[in-house]
Length: 215
Image 1 (cartoon, helix red, strand yellow):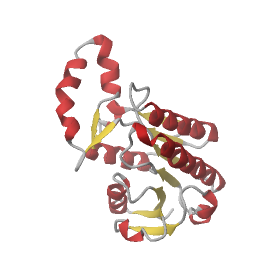
Image 2 (tube, rainbow, N blue to C red):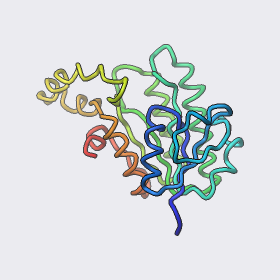
Image 3 (tube, one colour):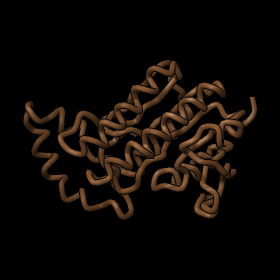
């Protein structure tokens, strides 16, 4: 059947830049969408595709023969003040990616969403929920991953909250939300994404924090 070809958006980001080398080690052929002038930010192990993630017409012809599409585009360092950017970038890029995936008959779509519902970051969560809805209506076989906060280099301060999570998980009334909004390590997040690539979903598969933490 040849090598597994993967098309990825957001390949220069915190997760994508670390995922691409892992996929290359798994003998995947990775094609990464990147803006003009940002090619050097991509890690080795992939072929750059110059295009605009907000416009499917700018990259749709470069997807085939990929079987897997990984959508990682997102506003960096999300916070409430970036609500307009979530709609202008996260949601618009997802809409473009889903359209392109349908047109090119992608076999499996992988989307990095966010844990939900959540008591904070309402606009961010709402946009991700709308993006998930687009995917569910598309008919594409899909894996949706819902981390809350990914711990890793430069993202370690939430370790201070570990005792709070431990405490909340002790009580039935807070146990479910504490687990759903739990902390995920970068290693677990990357392992879950690699697993999703290697084990395509039939229909819709949603991986919540407890499932991500099992990798």
